Length: 321
Image 1 (tube, rainbow, N blue to C red):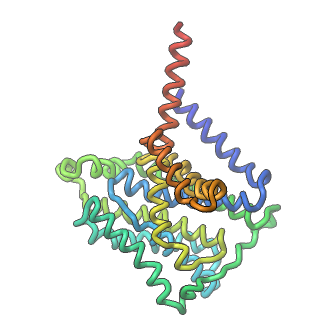
Image 2 (cartoon, rainbow, N blue to C red):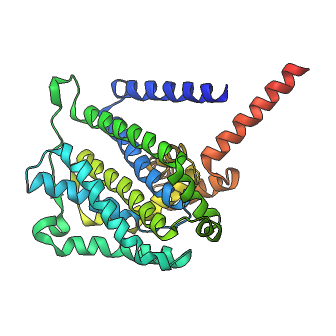
Image 3 (cartoon, one colour):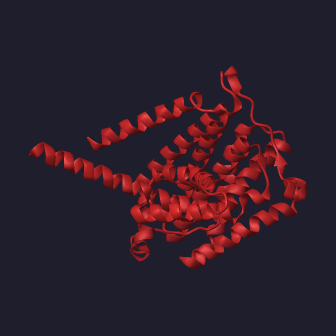
């Protein structure tokens, strides 16, 4: 019964998402497109941190690599935008896997510091290769033309493109985590010694998890380049990496649907904080952050599950009386 109810809620949510572009302004459509893009990145980071237990403060670097891969392919090589998404995924998977190999000797805060240095270094490296990246000025792009004569504007089309990619990657993540690979990933987080005793190659799985997580984030970066139509090194500062980690914690660690909640938080709460107090928006954002952590320590997804379970118990107790 709960499974059917969950599927029904997913179908309703997808139906509402499909209607939204015709009810909102282009700016709001762009904001929701950014929500879906962030959700993809948060899902990738959650696979690494929530399910595998590896803390990363540097996923903004993979976001930047994906964005610049798409921008360079379209701007300098005149390659269609459709090819940029899988190329960004492959490139970031390789980068994440290679970075994960030396990081195998690091755990906890030491791994977090190593990834933190990655987030600091990549924007500076992008400025150095000015011929390819445009240096500090970045690369200005044109939004993709709407194909097949669809009755949509560019923002609406990019919204549906981001939504379609998000749904495909959510489906892939669910199937991956429910398979033997997913059980091995979680077992390494829960008890790495027991996992090795059971014959699981922890080094390989941790590197692969890092690669998959980076690939998800690279796809998000490529979609962001398409939606914003501009990339610059300063857009991928350490603040982006911190926001991604905040989104994972706020949405809910080891929660697939938590990526959506976390994406809404990091997209809209800073704007609300700016509207409430232009003098100190960071303070308002911090208050929001502390409040969510205090009232929902397992994240928004965990809080929603608890409320749903409480409501279900009350209904059952009411029906028995």
